[in-house]
Length: 352
Length: 170
Length: 100
Image (cartoon, rainbow over all chains, first blue to last red; front, side):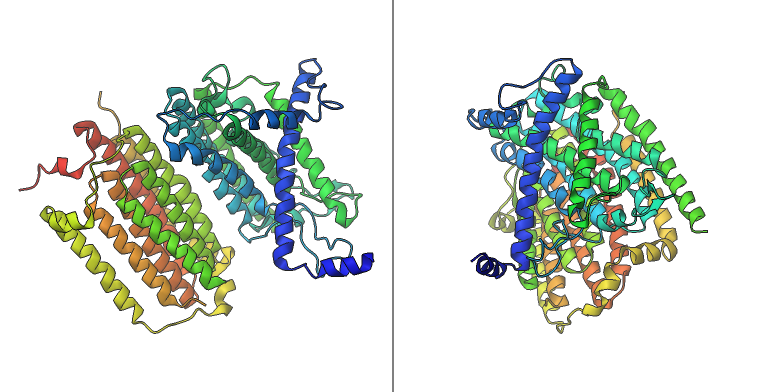
């Protein structure tokens, strides 16, 4: 009976349905990871502040994000009368859309055949273009529009200031982001994320993995700084700080549109962490697990970086806006250029 | 499948460009131009040029259009006086009349001339050679190295010039 | 398969739309946007022709065109800002004092 069912299901397997299923699974995983991030942030924040955090809704408060979503869904959707209707509506869509789209080229495992069910192995990613790193960079730079349009279309001074500051910060830190990426691309010799991860396989002395973290320690630091500033988080979140500008560019948004901005911020964090693991921490490569469970290593590394993100937010004070811009242009950008020069020298030296 | 994609992207590009030109709110014009650039990036992917497609999004849609958007928001001119329709353009002041007629003539002439070319299809064997980023880098930095360096000087000059020209006189 | 002429015709139409924008619009920013449309049409021609000849040169020229377009947009917008500060209007009809 089950053999007949499996045979019939195999009839449905075409490249289109396989890709559709992958997209569906990854999309849902991203949304669930955003919900998980909400819970983790509140729990970690609570423990750092020596209190318990949410513990009413479910065992350790694990149902808290779902309760938050239900609350947000049932709120009234407001729109200021003088707001530009079209732009007000599409701004959260652009933010959330670009956040999800950037994850389309991130690989998170070797290929799997679902234990022989699929006729040929399917690599665990949505697609693999040979310019994958640039695609992520391009989609991240499109995310600026969501914020700019949100700030402008709300027709309120706080929103406009917050939106302009936030977008200026994002485009300033994109430069260091791109230069840190360029250094890794030089070392790997390819722009495809899958090939960059595969070129980090192997061990030195049998137990030190050949990650790009070791020759690029400075580059990793630059990348994480730029990534944190890109997602408007942790010490660089002046434009959306509660005490400064009401709530920055999403002041006038309520219910689902606000939830979209929130979702976009968390999914951007996940994307930056996922790209950082692929570039610097060896992606899905790890010692003990068999081939088809490699994605567990990927999730462990991404979770470590996300914990680091949350830890930074609740430990460090935030930069003032002019300090933030000065850091981005006068310190991080020259550092990224020097890192690039150092990497070029290293590559030349290693090639003999 | 590929022809369908070509027609979809071409339709998006042309319709978005038409709305950019015929539309009164400058914010909407900028956003429509961004969609037009996105459609063009799709066309570049169809032409086996993924690097150019991604560069188009990064530079044009991600940087130049942000600059336009900031200037539109800074100057805050809400709507211009009604754009003349085609009929008013033909009957309006002399400049507009000549302009509308000339643009129409240009469109018709180009379509007529270009569609009389014999149909030449792309060679599928050359796809890999054209889309390889390593190839682009090698040609760019060896044969066109001087133009590359001159472009960097050009950008520096433009940056300094823009700051000086737009500065407030005290 | 799409032949080369389809791409050239599309690029011609886009170029004509850009030219119409430059002639017909009374807002300097939209004039600059129309110039960007024209430059994009030219980029499309270059990439299509490069693909036809199997050479990478088309994409390289595109690279330079994009860079020059960025520089020109920056300086053009700075000029628009400076002019706006003088006359408080963005219409090119306000700056005709050098016409005879």
